[in-house]
Image (tube, rainbow, N blue to C red; front, side, top):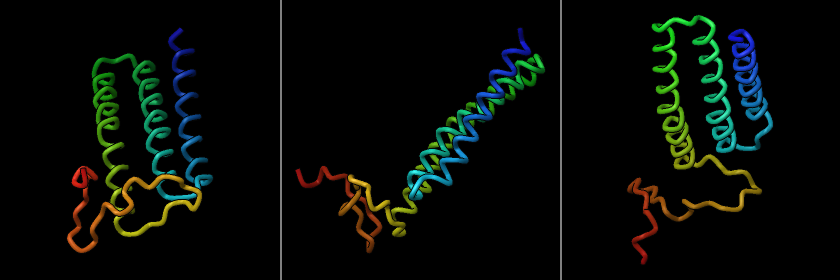
Amino acid sequence: MTEILVYILSTSGAIFILLAAVGIVKMPDLYLRISVTTKAATLGIGLILLSAAFYFNDNAISARVVAIIIFMLLTAPVGAHMIGRASYFTGVKMWKKSKVDDLKGQYDKKTHKLKSGEEDK
């Protein structure tokens, strides 16, 4: 029973990581690539780590797996946000078919300040 669970978790994790790799190639701009890799790769890594925890069936390894998963869930979105924010502020262009740019006109390049949009109300 444990072997089947390990197979399912590790295969699912590998599929999500494969989808993240395909997303890097297929997405048209940096911002969409960041989104795809953050979500799919984090889930894939988490599933593979869970399969390792079930495979080894050891408390020490399971504790490390849980710690790594928590670390990944906390740091991957923050890192992706910071990369996306720095890319936007340095002038990396969005995809030409993007319809919404919430930050347009909100960033002052001279002072490096970002308005929230609430100042006008």
